Length: 192
Image (tube, rainbow, N blue to C red; front, side, top):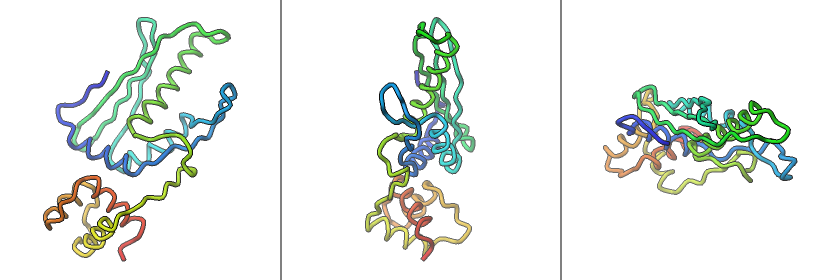
């Protein structure tokens, strides 16, 4: 089930900014049963939490249970605006050979936490060059970054909505995704 605050304008912009900054989650654990690698819960948190924090977002997760099911309620909050989104996922709590109900519940909760975080942050765990995704910038994005650096004051708040509004004031017809990439380009390449 998915729910959200009456308005989601600000949280959506912050999520877009965060998702633009995130690439993948490194596969740091081995699954001996399937002979495969995966990104464990700690790796998801280590990758997602700092970027969400930088973008003004808080993600929290709560274990839930009832009617023979166990699951996770994940909530993302944009404290500045008070906007929020939450989603709940439940799976049946069935007997599992060799595990107590508590162990089975813990496995389900950990699994759902990883997958819900990945879905909300729009990240993947896979062949991601250890999380070092090299962004590709268009000539337009580079030109917008150069233009922006010429017109802004040092104390200008470099957020995607602020950049988008400022560039649009100068007839530069920029959307929020382009504004986020311009900011990333400036941060990576300095104010030259």
